[in-house]
Image 1: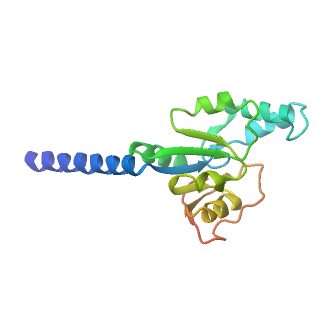
Image 2: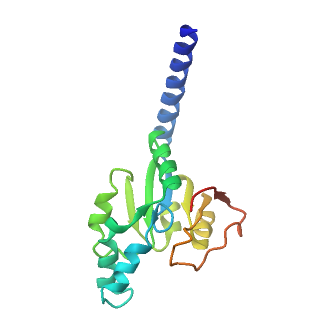
Length: 181
């Protein structure tokens, strides 16, 4: 019995090693939208709104981007990001936010993501890499992944999210990640 366990363990380690090597050789990536995908970010946006800064101004975005300490991790999408990372994939985070004051936010996520982009046109980044999937919550996340030829995976928004626009899960026949809200 112990011999079978050892052989199985060796086989699992070998399969893992081959998988990681193949992923690294192919330079495969997986992308994640930030707001309402990896993170429940409504508290940061509320901080921006309460700051007295004009909505969507440079000052507003500085407050939002520097309020990551009040955001909450979404367990299922984060777990999946960690699994991809463990398998050797480069995890890339893309947010449609403006980047004002976002250096600390990017630094905060270096442990997970090889790249963190502030970019409204997410397809421009998805087209440049060998992405196997893009996780996003909004309709535009899904359409931009499709436009770039990347498999879209819909993450459900939290029912507590203040952002309700551009959200029609299943409209594009995309896979919807269970328990992701």
